[in-house]
Image 1 (cartoon, helix red, strand yellow):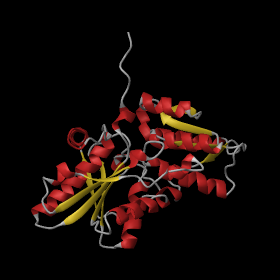
Image 2 (cartoon, one colour; image 1 turned 180 degrees about the vertical axis):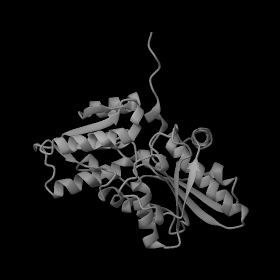
Image 3 (cartoon, helix red, strand yellow; image 1 turned 90 degrees about the horizontal axis):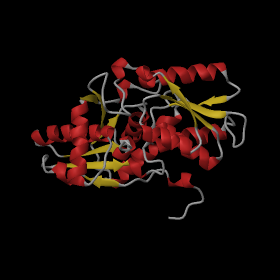
Length: 304
């Protein structure tokens, strides 16, 4: 593959059959889309690129211009903004909780993004509130991308839906999608249902407000993103931290997939749906989106 710019490599990520999980669910296909094959290592490359391209087209951002892109992030979207900003000559300022992983801090830093840390006790909601305040106080300094409200976030996932549909040759019956900003679930669900309105769109969120599934939001205890539409979901599954982590271990040990914990939660939700279908004697094709790899969450060992 020869590209004029790295941004052209976003999307068209691999989709794999989860053979070890399928042994538990006779008659049901289980597929996973590996979004860590995007250049920035996560599904968030799609939304970040969509938001930036729209802002450039509207004149809200410009290479070498007076305004920096500003947004809140728990990590992956920030990394996406940072590398795309570097590739396109844009300044990027990121508000993130001070307790995000060292790997995420280092990645956004080496791409040249300004880091603004919010109260770690307030998690991603606190970062969102601080970003909004900065945007109000310094409108001449920042373009506020606002991934939680920007319609270009879900719009980016028309490509995700198309790729899922084409890879399964239109057999997909159920899509299991994690809830963070909710852009992946909203956009992918809409794209799939335009192709077949009977497809069930199942969301996955943490079972607890305080959880260890980084990248996912427990919506009942969080600021609800403006782009979220609950009525577009068939149902929501609540996955415990232990279930997500255990599935990430299973994917690593039996599929060779170094999946992150939110990816483990999505796969756990997909297996739950597949078990229901298999127990009822129904066939189906269940797809899930795995947002990123586990190495994004690993910290280096302490040095003496």
